[in-house]
Image 1 (cartoon, rainbow, N blue to C red):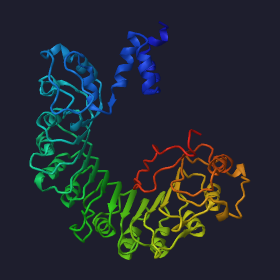
Image 2: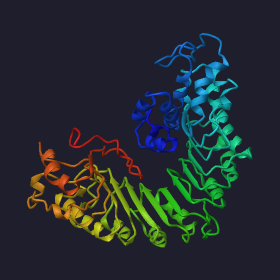
Image 3: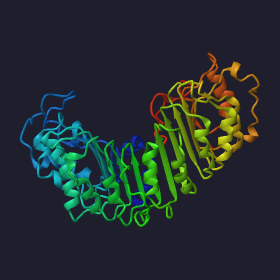
Image 4: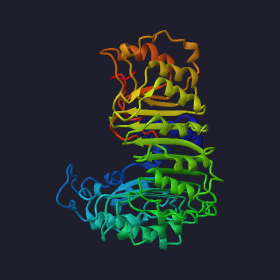
Length: 488
């Protein structure tokens, strides 16, 4: 072997640059490279079930489909059967565990074995999805809690007295060994069965820096508890009827370390939360207004947004009711805005369309804009043509992600020219261009992609996401099909 491969630190850095598929190939070269590569391959495991493939193949019969009960052992379980499981778990830092995915695949004797709690000594991140309340798999969850943990995510769909989340949260709140920096909750519609254990778990983690809470329940108490956390820097609250019971006076004494606030909900509730949080230390604010019923942005909320305007970097309007341009105009005063989204999925004669002139006004009002998403179910409410895209390409070279429904038919673009001044577009840094539900003349998509869009944005990936699905505030649309059809 070449002496270079004996330089462990250097080789490890090289291995980190490889994809998982290439890491697997490198690990098969020889024993030395296997030893260096395995820790990286098993560092982040997206499915806890993968570890149970490390047991001897003769221990139980693997099933491909769900069965009535867990598989039975073919022979007695020995400590030596755990050797590969324990070896690979030593270097694992992050795992996702879904209870339902284990229920019919792993014998209960394995899940209750005393060696399981000795695994994953260096685990730092645990994400749990509770899809079942069966005794065996759910008992594994507390066994995976380690003093080394820094991040815990809980996504579950149960709301009954047997909820395994209760025991998990009690373990977190009562143990003195945890020092979590991040917690994430995605909770059911009712929290009555938790009896406050979720707030005690949050309060116990005084080193918490990031907290995410999503629920359709009233989670005011959880956010109130978070206010007293001394080091909390990022708070994200979404999908919830949560803010109506906040005190009307400013409580800026709380959240004294908060720098990032991400909030989703209906305007009245967002208004109350903003009114209850001091803006002094905030550096980044993101709002997603869902289904406003009194206009897109009504005066009381506008007043609160103005207090945050120097920090408000991300704003998304998710509309299910008619809107007018006057409702949207207050957002133009948010000069620091870096990301804006408008999703309008309702056809209505009461709504005013967004035209080329309106879109240019939006682009001119937000000089720091890097992400723009305008999605409409019908081009009748979003009358944007190719000239607006040309304007964005010429005036916003720092744009990184663009998702927009537009009219590309020649009849709607009589004055548009295919001649592109490449010199004006060479500096464009667009990374993703999503055409969503745009309309083209038959057979014209490929021509426009090659002769216009590719010249405007030479480094962008083109895709077409589903206009009917709700957009995510974090722009997670990279899995959308390529556009035009096929890899370009």
